[in-house]
Image 1 (cartoon, rainbow over the protein chains, first blue to last red):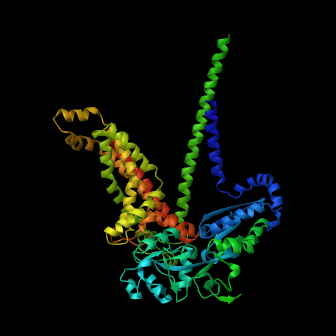
Image 2: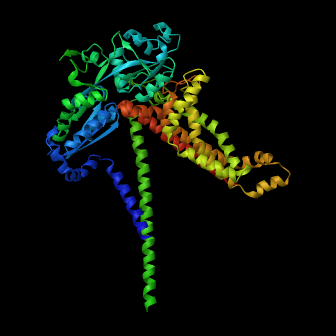
Image 3: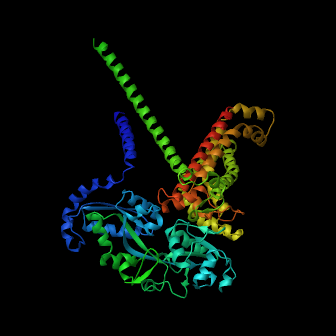
Amino acid sequence: MKFGKSAVLALTLAFSVSLAACGNNNNSSSGSNASDNASNASAASNTASTAPAETSLSGSVIASGSTALQPLVDQVAKKFSETNSGVSIQVQGGGSGTGLTQVSEGQVQIGNSDVFAEEKIEDAAKAAELKDHQVAVVAMAAVVNKEVGVTNLTKQQLVEIFTGKITNWKDLGGKDQGIVIINRPSSSGTRATFEKYALGQKTEDLKGSIQEDASGTVKKLVTETPGAIGYLAFSYIDDTVQSVQYEGVDPTTENVATGKYPVWAYEHMYTKGDPDAATQAFLDYMVSDEVQKGDVVELGYIPVSDMKIVRDIDGNITNK
Amino acid sequence: MNEKQETPLLFRKHRAEEWIGRIYTTFCVVLLIVIIVSIVYYVASKGVATFAINGVSLSQFLFGQTWQPDSNKFGALPFIFGSFVTSLLAAVIASPLSVCAALFMTEITPNWGKKVLQPVVELLAGIPSVVYGFIGLSVLVPFLRDVFPGQGIGVAAGSIVLSIMILPTITSIATDALSSLPRNLKEASYGLGATRWQTIAGVVIPTVLPSVLTGVVLGMARAFGEALAVQMVIGNAPHIPTSLFESASTLTSVITLNMSNTVMGSVQNNALWSMALILLLMTFVFVLIVRLLERRTRI
């Protein structure tokens, strides 16, 4: 009984303490560093040869934000921690908006985003505080249900579809089938990219259109719904859906790299001002050849180093 | 001598325990109140900011029909409408099923009916909402698409998924009410020569109706707040639907879809908090209705 009582007391205390700690998630990972250091000290010495940074690095890095970038950061963080046992890296999702908010408020070291911070943060001074690190490129293509019989769409045709001017595939040379738009919510980074670079304009949400945020759900709906059209990142496209040429250009990695295919965006990792040593080492590792040629390609992104062109926030393209 | 010393010691121990218990309980209650008050305060302060700081007009927000955050149009009526329609429809679908299940368990076959049906109903309550959403998307939506006009996705799919989710809430409350019904009421009815169905229709149901309604309101409250499963099958177009099979949005689905993509403190983010505030206020209304119904429950 005595044990029971004290256990209940302890639980309540722990609960209230953890509640109090919620407001400050910076401390959450620093405690684990010391033990990591001790247990991995011996392991670190024999992997030092492949280490991208000095093994003497220590600290904790939290990266949060874009779910589109999360798989890559997750995988790279694991590899980085193997060789840098002193650095603990936590990767959280939450969306681009969350990542930018948290990095701007100093709650995390890295904020992952699909879009430029200036496009999301209304306060220009706050956006200017953030330092941009572009780590990968994600390209997307319009995808349609396999039955509609259309494989190429021009910019004008896409605009007319997504603004509701064309409502049947037969007007585009396909079969007689109503068009069902599977869109993203208006705040989505993927939608912003698609509208900016494929349509060249913002679109309104049409009555009867369907909005889903998760790429997996979009793919499932395009696969199953007759007459459906949506857009997906390259890594999600397989033979269950029909990817569509844009102005006659195939959506391929090569065409993105050479600038022929315009529907792509940088994946950003923002830091507030200059990053600390551990964060800098991790960001350096992200853009190292090992990661860019390995994990980035493997997970369906396009390496920044492969890009033959550079694009700024206003969409101006210059050759590298 | 010995006994004289022990009694006060034991007495003191009891008093100490009494005080520890009291302090502990009070601490927990205060903690609980602090948590609730801070949640309400946080949601309210964020939700009011849309109107106080960003200058969106309240009537525009509540009755405006266009939701275009990019051009500063924050009309939330389609979402409010969607939330009410789906949860009302869900209650309409689920209530008869739940009441029948409860009657079956208590009046018709109290023994094996309860043994079989109760665990099944409880199982429904334990299934995570993402599973309901996924089944809805994989089974229900294609079925609706084949049978009815439209894409299958829409208000009907959302309501059906919700109705299954709130079945256990209504059923368990109706079962409790039915099994606490005094025996003599039914016996009097049988004594007058009424059949079982006459007794159920004329005596049992009218007597437990307030309790059943409490269950229905609680079920609706749950349906009103459910986000994930509905979001997957309802389509989320920000328009008032004209048919049951047309894409629509609920307050919760819009919040979950957009919250992570918007930056804290921006107008759009604040508008989402205002919707959260509406949800919170609706919860208060539901609780109030339940309180009023409970007052009538006394048999």
